[in-house]
Image 1: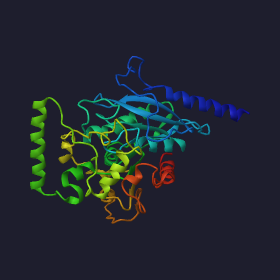
Image 2: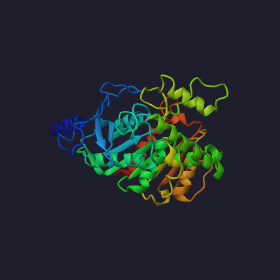
Image 3: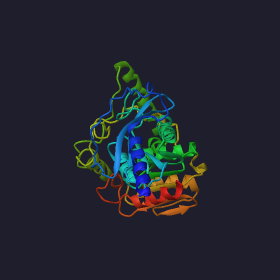
Image 4: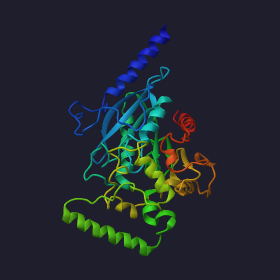
Amino acid sequence: MKSVIVAAAAAVLLLAGCTQKESNQTQEENITTLNLTQEWDKTFPKSDKVEHCKVTFHNRYGIELAADMYVPKASDGEKPLPAIAVSGPFGAVKEQSSGLYAQHMAERGFVTLAFDPSFTGESGGEPRRMASPDINTEDFLAAVDFLSNHELVNPERIGIIGICGFGGMAVNAAALDPRIKATVASTMYDMSKVNVEGYFQSEDTPAQRQEKRRALAAQRTRDYKAGEYQRAGGVIDPLPEDAPWFVKDYHAYYKTPRGYHERSGNSTDGWNVIGCQSFLNQPLLCWAHEIENPVLLIHGEKAHSRYFSEYAFERMTGTKVEGESKVVGNKELLIIPGATHVDLYDDEAGVIPYDKIEAFFTANLK
């Protein structure tokens, strides 16, 4: 009977923890300026195994970030709990893939935080729809700040998950912040590499980069004169007949009920044209080889983007990999047979390796 009472009391504490904002702030500081949607508006169904609430926290630039916090209802009386911060894909919002990953991991016993990066979704930051290798890496570190000070979380047991373009940001955050004890990057993009080189190094010459620089500089002049930023457009719609197959995959997710969300730039009008300018000369993974804590890279065998994870694994380990799973020390590259890039966004194809992710974090957040 005593064990039942203890477990019930622990459960009450866990659920109560999902009613607060930043646990170490004063009531005055907790007043948010963000307009947060309270109803369930995710692209996936709500689980009855977790408690969900909205929270806010700020990064070191003073930008207030909005997040969905997921707390497991059943925790076997354990407290404080390990925690995971999740973000991505690039141009998505927390109501899409990152929230899905977060909810699944909460079902498995982790406190999770799916957040909108700066300038996107429900998070703050002006102008809207900008991206920054520094600020978006900082967003992960700010999530760790928040979780480290939360009463439900063991600050020595915090990991992160980055999806698509935020996989690269997650690896960069892991290289910068040793508080991150374990990192998963799923179907990752290196946003610096793709902006500098183009896909598959198709624009990897000084002349082509200079052309990009001139185009972005001219766009800045036009934007300043107009007093607003021109948007680049989200995923193309309707699809042209000759669209690459991976663009068709993006369309099948972002432009259909499967993954469409009104706050997602990929679903609507995209980033600002100049939104990714700084990635042209700010590499993300230059210090990946100094990450001491474990990293798991997950990618689909048939993903057009697979080479980004292979490149990141090589940066971290010095081991060149061509299309196969590999483990070197505490770094692992897991290739999912038959999977494409977008297959790892949601459960449509049933290939996201949640069991593997759970085992990875259980082993390394202890």
